Amino acid sequence: MKRSTDRILTTHTGSLPRPPDLLEMIEAREGGRPYDVVAFDERVRTAVAEVVKDQVSAGIDIVSDGEQGKPSFATYVKNRLSGFDGANPDMRVFADRRDFPEWSATTKLSSLATTPRPMCTAPLGWRDRAAFETDIRNLQSAIQGAAPEEAFIPSASLGIIAEIMANRYYPSEREYLYALADVMKEEYEAIANAGFVLQIDAPDAAMGRHSQFWDSPLEDFLAALELRVEVLNHALAGIPEEQVRFHICWGNYEGPHNHDVPLKDIVDIVLKVNAGAYSVEASNPRHAHEWQVWEDVKLPDGKVLIPGVIDSTTNFIEHPEVVAERIVCYAELVGRENVIAGTDCGFGTSAGLDKVHPTVMWAKFRTMAEGAELASRRLWG
Picture 1: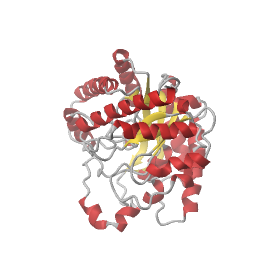
Picture 2: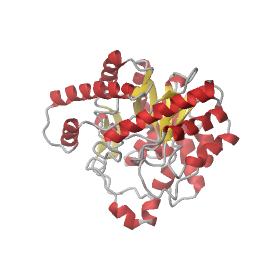
Picture 3: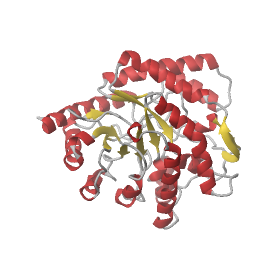
Picture 4: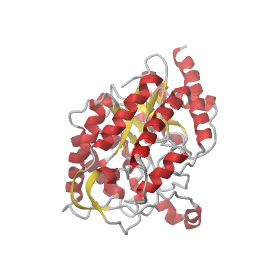
């Protein structure tokens, strides 16, 4: 994993908007409608090449494949694993949506974000290993000409899979999580073995408090998080920590977030994940103050912090000076070499739901790169 040894490096959280023609094919596939499989695979390949080139042009040092072929950062798993079936009749309830039903009624969701999610109804296994092999091959090809500093591929955490695709087969949540670990381990290992950084997308590590455990004591959520970290470490066994990034967020949506669990309540558990870097929301109005956590919590030796220095839910383009201030603040607390500038979350979490217009997103990336350059001058002279 690259470090900011002589300047602040930039990255993001993984998902990026899909081109309109590719989005049409993803929607057809997810909706069970006919589509040209060969044309789809080729368009994903070219879309990855395009989005990697665009990231480098915008000043992103550590790039991803943009999750171009996936319907979302987590539900893609249902297309790769066997054991899922049916449609979960229980909708997740977000605590802030309960508090503000009038606001909730006005929020727009993409058709893919509202697609019924299956349940685990049989033993888990692989039915499409070729899918993650294709992800790897597409990114390998894309970085050949673009020459970024480094590249990563996101993969869903065990906890978020278990949260959105409920268990109706295994005797306990623990057994379900360990079954997920044993199958997802293959995807995790393949990404790392290909030489890429593996990013574990784990919104459940923070968002789970107000989406799954909103009506339970905090202790219940923390116990569930401890279990998920234990099982994730089981799945990551054998993968060098320096090849793993762990991303947490409180839900990639512009909303009240008045029930978000504070970072200080979960940070000690998050740091137990066997990862070389931790990616954390840090610029939205509900969490922008949480740099203070790192005054009291020591980032473990050899680890990297990736604070979000631009927001992923609004069309404000942050000023480079604001970005620089945020970076310098973290660098002064945990060490400049231990900071990589990132984004709060992805810009294409669910295909077709672009909260930030793509043209604005690229401008936000450019301003992040400008802010990182300003911060580098201040930190290195």
